[in-house]
Amino acid sequence: MKLISWNVNGLRACMGKGFPEFVTEAEPDLLCLQETKLQAGQLELELSGYRQYWNYAEKKGYSGTAVFSRREPLAVTYGLGQEEHDREGRLITLEFEDFFLVTVYTPNAQEKLARIDYRLRWEEAFREQLVRLDGRKPVVICGDMNVAHQEIDLKNPGPNRGNAGFSDEERGAFGRLLEAGFTDTFRLLHPDATGAYSWWSYRFHAREKNAGWRIDYFLVSDRLAPRVRRADILAQVQGSDHCPVLLELDNG
Image 1 (cartoon, rainbow, N blue to C red):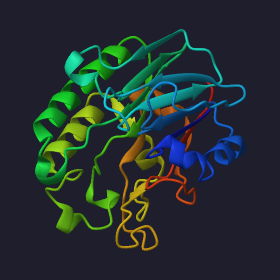
Image 2: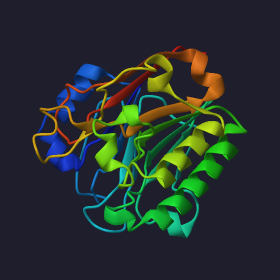
Image 3: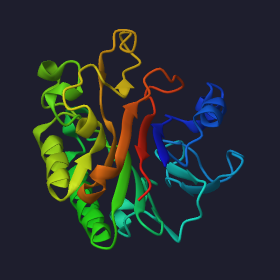
Image 4: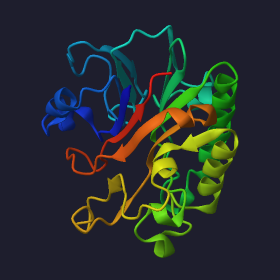
């Protein structure tokens, strides 16, 4: 089973930068998108063979997630079921026979950590939800989680320490999520890989210099880890300031 997650930073813009061609070539079984920046009815997207599920932010041109699935899920839910956290279209959960799929666009802590208090409330609610799901069946989590976990996960850890995406608070929250029973699939297969990033600033020719951050993830319940066949970052794929990330699981 092949899964791909991609923060497209505006799907309408990405459509003109090779998105349909990428999906046709990659042929994922499940495709998860973040930061779609769409409202209902703004884009008619037909991907042959895929069912579509969208979660839109109330604010126009902001946030948003989507899932395209070749398999029909047993159930689909949107958000965390808490009003505080469900206005920005950040979460979709698909239930299948043998696992849950959760795609997430984690709130950014913003410059000078202006939104860190909200971010940490989100992190706690998100972790609690995943633990509940994991108690029922294994979980695959993917998306832009807006944190570089360790120094190896960004090009310039020193100057960025304490900044949004590399604060002690955010890194600690991510660590607590892993400790709750989840595995970072990329580090499972590539524990020492350096220069492996999924986001680059549009400024300072960052992508050309590979001055990036690894903030897009596939996590799995620890008991799914033996089924991880491949976990990669598709850094050659253009179209957004993020690149897609990929997970292949052996069929259980």
